[in-house]
Structure formats: C-alpha cells, structure tokens
Image 1 (cartoon, rainbow, N blue to C red):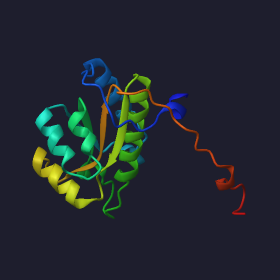
Image 2 (image 1 turned 180 degrees about the vertical axis):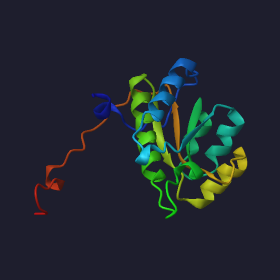
Image 3 (image 1 turned 90 degrees about the horizontal axis):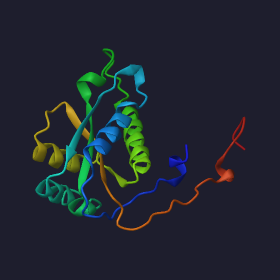
Image 4 (image 1 turned 90 degrees about the vertical axis):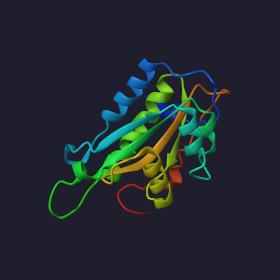
Length: 171
C-alpha cells in the first residue's frame, strides 16, 4: 500500500471544497478500522461551516489551520458502546486511533491532504469542542482530522530506522 509511504501531514489547503463522494469514501475507511471486541465505538462529526472551523482553530495552539480548511472530521468515541464488561475496561483509544489512521490513508488515496490533531486526553480541548458542538457526555472527541486539497505539493520522508528494530530479545 503506497499511501502508507506517501502520506504526510498537510496543514495548508486550497479553498476548493471537497466533493461529497470523497468525504463518504474517507468516512467509510474510518468505519473499516479494526476494533477491540468489534465494539466499533466511533462516531464521526463532519464540520464544514466556516464559523465552526474558526472556533476549532481557537481551541488549541496547534489547530490554526482549521480556519482556512474546507472541512474537518472529528473522530469521537461513544464510551457507552465501548464498554464490553463490568470491569470498566475499554479499548476505545486504540479503536479511534486505528479509525483516524484509516481516514488519513484514504485522504491521501483521494489526492487530498490532512493532518491529525490530537484532542483526547487534553481535557480543555475535549470540553471546549464538546460544548461548542453539543456532544452528549458519553461522546468524547478523540482526534480531529483537518483536510482539503493541498495548497502546495507535499512529499513524505522515510522514517525507517533499523537501529530501533529488535529481533527475539532486546539487544
């Protein structure tokens, strides 16, 4: 899968809107993520309103690019759906990370660019986003993916480092 090696974080976008069919394929990719106990605790909020994108830009010191992007997808966890036994143990963080990565890979596949903004566990971001968008208390915004058509060509760099690979035992 070449998109794994060509994907990189894109933070500058053209004002061109993203087509609905591309958005749907991106969301479908998120739904295809692996999930612990097949709980699939994800919910996605697609944000394209300029006022809302401007509000998101002010919710974190690292989210300024949202104001000039055509849209953002909030990857949220339904913590009620995530629970699978009485122990309270959940794996929604892992599930939502997998869904977010799938979304980023499909964004690249669509000829778009995107960037993953970490939201959870920064509770000030979680609270401000939840309040602004009226999320129920059991829905937690995990990540935001800001996306659009890249304003500039982007190129990924290789990250493989054989010195950090261990076989059999730590050596």
